[in-house]
Length: 220
Image (cartoon, rainbow, N blue to C red; front, side):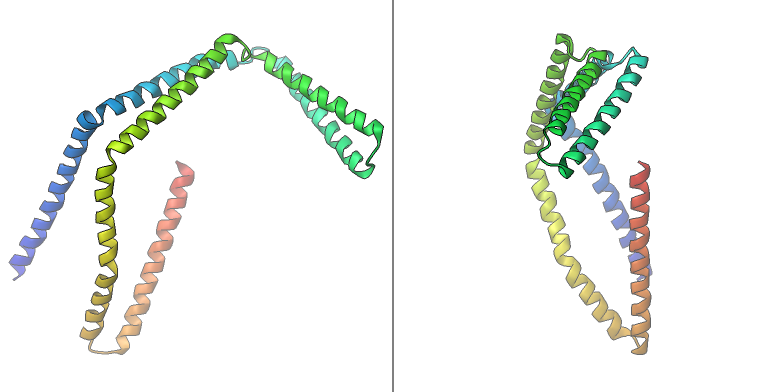
């Protein structure tokens, strides 16, 4: 009997290993042949997007750091004065002088913003063309991803069916396992003790997995 159990365990391990290999091989075949065109389009679009972003950085880079510092200080001052003027207008609604001051600070804020934009060459025709080209690449990439997902819908349906079958069998499996386990216990008092230990292990494992997941998410 023990030899038969050992053989069954070995067979189960072998079946799992075969399934892993078959899954990897089938995925590789699908990647290269079935959705190879879409994957190539996605890769080409991503590469072109990176190249366009690298070229665009040259236009976005500010060479005059002193002017940038002064304009940022001016922007902060204008925003503070505008906020103060708005607060004063709330306290004294209908004050024409305050309203005129708010319009003046808003115009100043626009001028400072335009000056900040003028420090880099983002207003040039070349930069605008790069932005359009980058956006067009993004659209092509999304279209290729949708086409690939559509081709693999049939395989996703099979995976969903399999997962739902597993979910369907979990509840009866747990129920029957508990019924058999409790029925085989000689001392009925041990049920509460074993149940408490089971719940403690379950809660501890859940907390550990959640904590580990939060740590990894924050790190990566």
